[in-house]
Image (cartoon, rainbow over all chains, first blue to last red; front, side, top):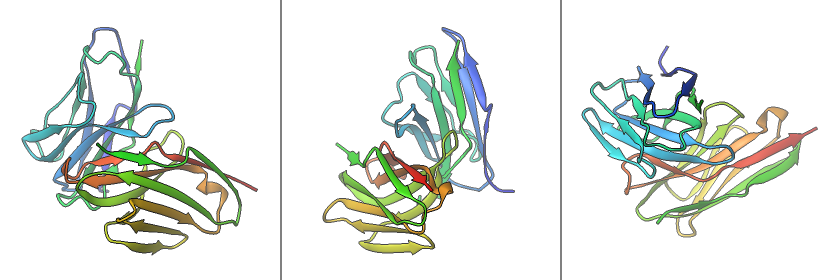
Length: 112
Length: 111
């Protein structure tokens, strides 16, 4: 089965802690993306990567970091610098031309 | 800058037709997308328009006018399961193939 997986489904973060959200795809897509969704809000772009070993900041990159060492993987680290991390995090991927983005099931991050 | 506007909420009854509008302002427009999102779930792709006109896909149709910065999603023969948020998103050449999303329209379908 081809698709995008995200883990964990729920993640709890303590104050001052860095946490990493996993995103894996086996669709052979070149491009991958991270979005954040707050209650009642649309999706906001955190980071995106058009190709392996390259990534770009989105609208709300502060307090986040990413890596793209493999085509199928695009992990997102929420650092302690992100003061309001509680949200629903969605990873997506698309072909290089980007006609359609497919989303993973998401990770809910909560702060203890 | 970029701006996408769509109504916050809409209501309709089963079997009816509903039109959800989306207006946008962006430089380097390169496509408009509609997604459906049920509560607590990830968005699922509905439609993609890059040229002016109507794209039909079963009960769902999407229209685009690039000169007016306007799109709509038309849902026919509404069913209870169509109760969801509908997200309008624009791709511009300012951010590669990433999408900029509106805040979504929550549609409630009643019997």
